Length: 71
Length: 446
Image (tube, rainbow over all chains, first blue to last red; front, side, top):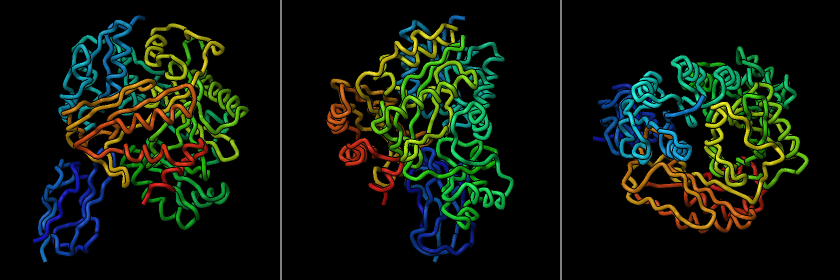
């Protein structure tokens, strides 16, 4: 099962997908804010959004799982 | 109206900087800090420190009530806002005054007038200060396209309540303008709570030059020369120097006159900065007025020998300017390098623990740092962790000293822009002194 992880520590600004959405590899799925900069996080492989683990406003650490994808 | 105890409503390097000048005047200091900043040097440097909230800025450094409460609890009689955060917030300045405290900055009315870009433009036009051809607040996309046609493309779409480079977008034709208008509008709403946009002519190969001014309550205004701030990434400054290596002597005189006129037009008091955009032909236009201390104030201190924070404190106490225009001399050259916790190529943030922070020392080197070895660079705030200010007899000497200083600057545990700064010190345009705000877009962007 694929996971989308935070590329750096920051605050979740926007979740761009919903549960059940089909996403493509390279698609922006979440926007983090770190050090006053918006940092988009992409899915690195295609899949269906199984679970969104975070919500807007939450603080996440580098490497934390943001979204679970299924084939 | 003498100050006794100053609360610094800021963090990091600028809090350290302000505490230093307060101490040398014999003033007591109060630091405020968020849960993320407990371990930073400025907290222990102050005589007292008050925890004001959790890490997010809305709950700490932008939390007006928590800061005012900290002031009353510690018996501070004044608040220095530093830069960023609440420094240009007229509502906060007024609250400070309403609580019977001294606001170390210009009057709230002046902050409000200069903070709204549309009002600021109009004020400057009336004062005879040249402004970039542009519009007032726009009502619709259609109006934007019509006005852009009159001004001539390319144009820059800006948020009326904006700042810090956020919510600015260049359009080269009507199609592009129509496309960027809605997203710029929603970004302006999200960041500044006001979706009003306006247009300005976009000047290609422009330079960003600003004039430091100081004014007392008797109406005396002097300039403290200019700072060249064209090395920018994401519309934020990276290197500043004084004097500007590229403007003509005649332009310089007109620029100073315009800055002093601008300050007089709003009856400015304290220290402030008037920012100008210069075209390749040395024509200049008013950009904005920063009604606070600037990040890059040390380059002005290096060439004038003045302490700008000390000057702020004495001016707010009602003293007159300690020097006349004729007495202020610019001597030698100075550059400031901003050390950012970020990837030097992608400019992506790089928060984390500093396993080593070892700044250089030497002749003509000043370090204004907000961190030390062992600190964690938090993702909640600005990525700037330190400033390296280098001065010398000539620009050439400063370039040589800077190369060595930045090579000796050891930071481990996070990525920094030091490699980019060293690359810039070898960049032919930068070395020649003839560079524009596009210098980083051409040389290092992917």
